[in-house]
Length: 326
Image 1 (cartoon, rainbow, N blue to C red):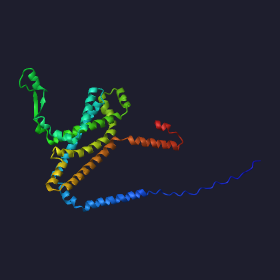
Image 2 (image 1 turned 180 degrees about the vertical axis):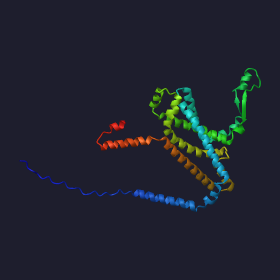
Image 3 (image 1 turned 45 degrees about the vertical axis):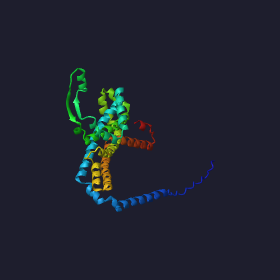
Image 4 (image 1 turned 90 degrees about the horizontal axis):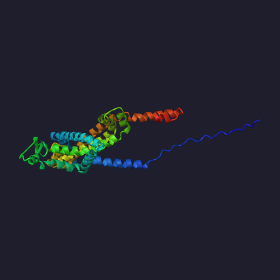
């Protein structure tokens, strides 16, 4: 006959008293930052060197607005040259032809090594090398002399170097050609980030190399290319101020500095330049955000859907191996 034994009830544990972790360092940091912000605001309000009324009155005058337009035009044209030529250079770097690879490497090496300010001043003085820029048969006079023909010229048309190499064109070429070297590396990295299986599958479908690059590779690479290109665009906006030393009169920093020199109010005009570049950069940041969101469609959804499927499998007691392979 079995003996019944009474099992004692397990004592219920006392409720846990959760004590929040104290972070005194955070409050000290908040206090220090608050004091510094208050000091900075006090400096802006009380220091007469800012001369806010004069600054606001001058920074929206027609010459300054014309300088803003000039900076934007210089930004757009330089980035168009940089992106277009950068894509070509990136394709050359990835080519199987060693000559194309060598030329692209030499280009990127040179323009990444020389500072943009030096390039801008150098291009602004190219008129020293040529009085005229002409198009036609190369070495026409030498060929004529070789065959005994004096004054042989096979030139179709030409321009005066002073007329065509204006300050704006010189600055545009210097910034655009320099930007192409950086964009070539960005595009090359984006193309190499696309899985090779995509190219192999497209080749199996009979697509040509140009079609594969245009329809398969580049659309997928844009997710990698767009963020650094946005950064380069913002950097280019700031680098447009370098052409003030060419000089380019239709440029924002040139106009603001001219006002400061003429009125002996140099510091307020430097602050006005800071405000203008902050405003323009903020607009570019908004555009970059929407571009990134457009080219990242479908990337985040896959991860979220996979995480949700794993959670459902865990709740139902299933395994997550099939979910990972889905």
